[in-house]
Length: 311
Image (cartoon, rainbow, N blue to C red; front, side, top):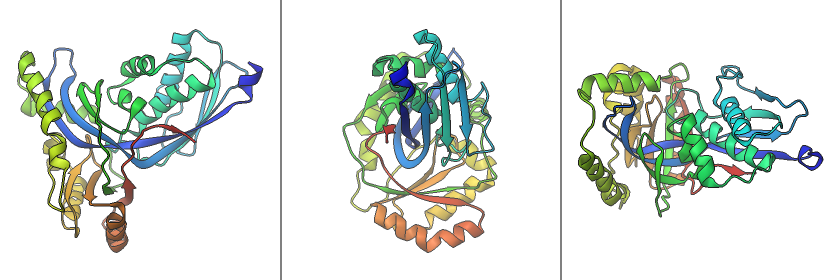
């Protein structure tokens, strides 16, 4: 314990965007069967972990809009890891928040996975990736993706992962109205009410959808400076109900050199892709004031080959 007490772990916890989000249908367990491509981006929170002598999980943050209690995914993750590992250690955790909340960028899920990875190291538990992914899947559907990160196919409710052997060099501009957030649960509920009138029972259809994304998903993202194609089924619901999403998509569509634009996850963050980060930076510089005047926060991001990293 004495050696462990001296340790301090710092972790970069990145956001994600969806390069494909297809809702195949509603499952009998209440979740939705999904086929997705998820990609980490260089918009990140930062977490610091150190052992405390009280056997407690103590979370602090520079973000005043977050609950720091037991309902926070960071605290839930830490408590689950303590329980499963049957240890008495505690931890002081500090979160520096950059990823907007309720934005469709899975910041909370990323933080949860970062907590599992960070405390596994801090407490010297020596759990492997498979064990961490198993724990992550009990905490939330997006969380297992972040254990490995990068770019992955995500099936089931998000917990069935297949790493893609590719590196995409796009630059991205993100837009989000800071006064608007979207409930993921409500969005799926609304989508279900409109498009899922019965439960999924056809396993062959599910496998065909998965195979199609494996075979063709990345073909839509190969380019020679032509327009790309991104599918997000949830956008069908959110765009019609949320003026900030509708306007963000319109603004992005008008940007020079924009290859494609889409909403990420359940929104309301929207993004446009450009052939490289330099092009994206130029576009943001040229349009930053206009985005601000329209009420949007904006970021320019690169794609990451890896997800959560020690720093």
